[in-house]
Length: 251
Ligand SMILES: [Zn+2]
Image (cartoon, rainbow, N blue to C red; front, side, top):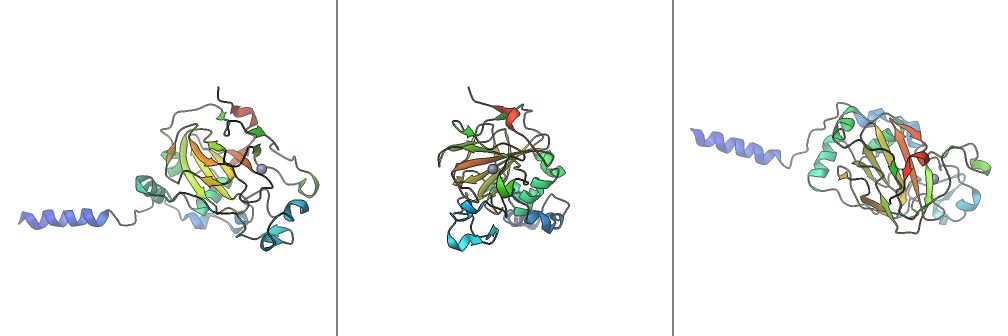
């Protein structure tokens, strides 16, 4: 009598492993993303100075903007293992996740997933020998004068290592945000997040835990970038903040 019961539970176990894991989110993430966010994913889009627009390949040039497919080569690692399973449970790694984090307070299950990280002060300067360029705020010229720069630009050679500014959970690593190219978003304890754009390639995938200083990407010029640089954004509960006063250079 006992044998079939044991067999039955084993079958259940076996069947339970490869099945799609149920999402822990109690909301439909896609339904939370209004269409206007999709066109507002980057401060660089759709307006670009004429001289930058002319440098794009012809198939990428449009009147006043760029086409979606002109993001540069996608170089992101394939998610796998328990980290990928965690990402699936939390709906991390999706475009809707990235858009949500750019605009809103991170969802409760995401906050819970990073609650065990140590409390950290400041931000590690994300490129060892990088040079701080265009700063945060309204610091553009010409036609872009009125568009806020929501992050800071850090000049560095192509391929230079980009490090996570704080420890946290990788929430996104892909090229689905127009203008940003290959981009990583890391969620940190306390509702903070950091974003690393224009990478030649990313080295992490959603669901992975990273320590402060871990290599997460390499500097490039994917997306809308006239030259290799890191575009870095820092948010607290969805609001972009100037990271400059928070930067700590490694000793
Ligand atoms: Zn920038």
